[in-house]
Length: 255
Image 1 (cartoon, one colour):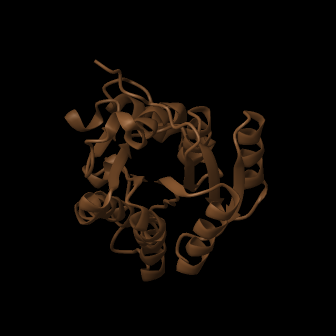
Image 2 (image 1 turned 90 degrees about the horizontal axis):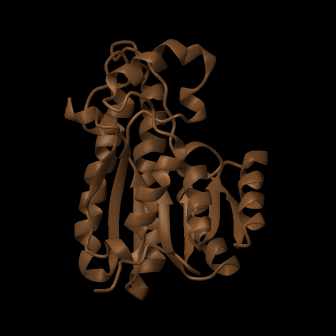
């Protein structure tokens, strides 16, 4: 028996939302697993910092600033990735935002902004990535959804976010079926409460206590705990996995 290979040596990956939170952690994790990584996010020092950290490991990296709601920006990012690093074969779409408001008071602008980034942005990212993967008949894409796509979070007024993440899960399955016979696998990871900068601000400290109490494992995930699932789904150890929504939620959705 041959053991499964979880390494990503010398493969080229694009990670959206790579400047912070889960996207940053996964970008670093892919590099540690042997990949060269194009880091896509809004321009700023945080994007340059993650590229520098990857380069310190000996892997190649490039900053590709842009906006996931802009198809031209994503097309340019894919072209830059291939020009600087080589053929794109792996992608993780992690860019996302969140805010809260009662549904009856939420403005159309607030609703649309979250849906545009968290849902349409994932579609546009997948589309840009697949346009170079499909002609080669090879690729693996992981979309970062959320357990909020499967459940409604107690005490959080975020109908727009929950709806967008549910859309990401079904989008992932839909693309997986469209592209299965053409060599591209598409899977999703649905994190539970995770200790990202968004969830470790002093103003949400009381909510975090409840988050942890509601999670069977009794704590939030660390960002690093999302790296293993992403590496697995992108690697040759997962060659028969497509259309999967992998819940990484500390058991939250079991209750």
